[in-house]
Image 1: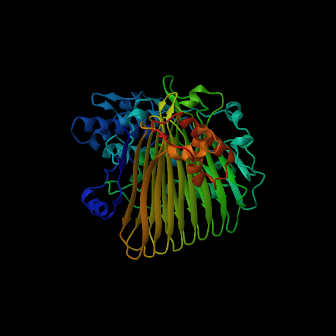
Image 2: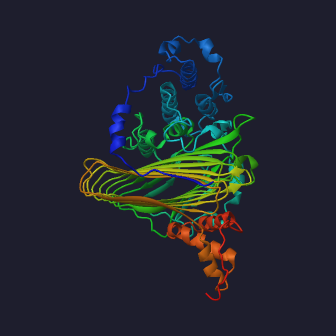
Length: 575
């Protein structure tokens, strides 16, 4: 039986509930005193395990327990060695899962020592979330529709630093179809680390920088790290008891894990007035799973970090593509955990395509936050194909008058050789001042026993007068086994706004197929034309031609040869 749940909610109730749900702030971590990074990391992660164990026994974590640890206690747990995934009597332990990945992070490569503070901040944040019981669980509001239980069942360890030879082998599959036509720059990042020998940056105009931290002078490097360490402004939009601004989309813990394991930062920096031509995209390829995981019985985990900083009047077309390493079976089952921060100054514009083209057995979690100043515009398109788990969170803050945020997305969910796919997209557009505009169109194609979740929020706070915001999710189900959870949401606190939202769902119309067949077109081509036409509204403006072709092939594979619905043509004599 097809199951379709829709939640069309006005946000006044959620906002009212936020104060009721708000409780005391997170406990202060008990290991803030200066220590060596290895010891401080060990203490942080030991605190996570202690808090988690105490919570399971029904008693709060005691900070004095942490303070009482001795050097011998710390030696029991090697901070540089991966810990096995913890399994408790009640099931899987989220703290143990995050800990296993964080403690397996390789030492920072030469020239990246400045990331040490970012790593330590991520570990402290993970520890604080474990203390407060805020790590994702199947009952968490932001994860309840597509839980993380299956992810927790799979052990992961952060991949080792990739050598130049291994990186070249991993990038061997990057043919012309894997790069946007006419790209001004193509930067390749392997397991989160920039590899200039695999990149081509020759088409960039003066005043534009694309690459890793190593190519920046000390001043600009510090500025990028300051951006990375300071989350963009935002609000808690779902009424959860969560002081972290990313928690509203459910990505706070993975954001902190990314910080704890960061090995580089992908930088796109545009000076004032610098515009990269719209037909010459900046293309960033993130290859996951090239390095060996830090544990023999675990799959690899890759952590990529992106900072886009556009000064006044600048702009570019940006493509970020996540792919598997070439010729690596282990890469197909790896976890990629990506974080992006986008800052647009006055009148800056970015048109961003987010393409997740990992393997069917892959797991991908990505969190992006964009902040738009006066007159700035951020337009993004998300492309998600079948995967074991593909969760994307995108938050956009409209901070200045005239700022715009526009979103389009396509999800293709169906059966794969590894089982049903699970796709999830959580978005939030936050109107924080007057006179801003936003729109969102999401398309979902479901087949087989695939699962897709969409939760999109538009929020206009009390100062956001003259807001114009429209949101629509349209879904097509190709058979009776697919399952969708669609929740377009509005939270309107301001007066004088023009806001709409809605959702539709439909089958593949066999009467339209018959119309095609009556004109000499095969049923197979007719069904493909209908599905392709449904998707083209999203794909039409995507500059990444290779991804469009591959998605078309995936869509073709999702279409069943026959549908359960038949057309009765008895007695028909003509068309």
